[in-house]
Length: 531
Image (cartoon, rainbow, N blue to C red; front, side, top):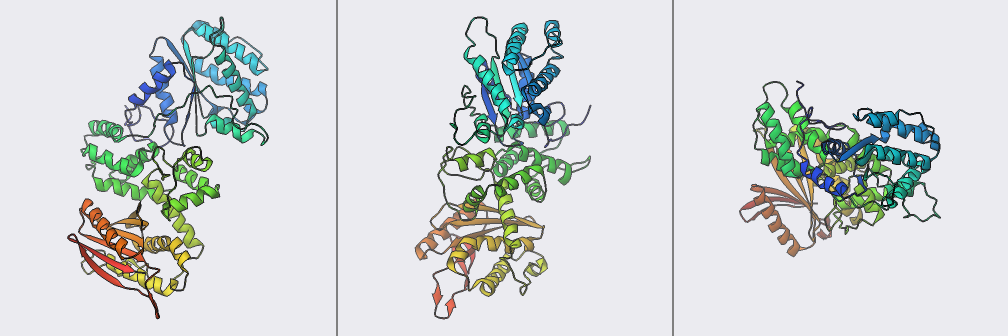
């Protein structure tokens, strides 16, 4: 028997892969199709759509009164959409391949009969006869419907199914009991791509579909089910609930990211036959390795940002400037961010889907920032990591902040306030990256407050450093912010924190004030620098 593994590419199969228990999701989907609903599963790439349909297909085969037909438009190339004859031939080929193992002689005989269908309406008549012969509640599932985007033939096909759906109660009419389409875009989005601007944009041929609101992300309890399965098969021990909660904290349950983190721990961090038990530190190591990796998921995310300037600007404002935008799915820009998996749904504000994506986006923007030569400091040798180590080998973060202060004084003292308020955080992140030099990593957390705070959490040699970046808004808000930081340090079990204050007010006749200070508050020590 083949050893199971964590899968991060393509569909997952229970016989081959460690998988989360999605039986509750299957149950809720079955409730929808049992009512005869037609619906579209439109979710970002690598979000588990194909796996979900595959498991649903297996489940329906176990139900005596249902007959599932699962096909994919992945197998229909560009030639299949040249004209109606080509499309019908390609569609029937996919359909027949699925039905070959139906185990019903009448069905096999029917699909093997030579036919010549040239129009979509003729295909509709043929499908009615097929469903009559099947004699069960027939469910059609089509994966990868995005392959048909920009094609009127597919919309004509949907129009045919819609027409048959509306006539389903008429005597002698046979049609699919339920139809499920799966892809990144909703069918309405496909419609928008090919219609002329003068056409009515929201006249979709698939307005018979009900909303599909099922959350396909993995909850901690579902991640735990996969880890439990893994420990039972391998004998490896871990605090399952704690590890699952940690993975969820960083991924928000994005299926690809969940599987990828587990795969990295299993195959890269703890490889070989004598594996160690999993720890929280292994999760953080896996994330660090993942963020250095080039994969299609990350490439798609960056590509979608680069190809949509307005979306890029919105994401930059959310991640770097901590600007707040109310969530409204009817806003086309926000909806586009959801389609691409960049934004999460359900909250009052627009938020990046998960902490890994947030980190990836910030790292990418930092890279662009440096590439465009905004950050230039040949005279300051800040990137030599050994210069930030104490005699005992521990990381000296106070020295990092003092060097950053020196750097800002020399390189940016003449820059205007608007530039620094817009780019100050980005300058620090770009400054910090070469110092960590792959041996440490950092995560950013924007904090909702009047001071527009951002927390940077750095891990170096298994030690954690919490740095807060904020803009000076006066003594009163400063004192309030100090208390918030001490509370955060307490929640993290830390006694020491660090603070970078971008001060555009504190100036004298001699120029901007650059100072440092150790602040004692609530039993915590905070080292602060003003830049």
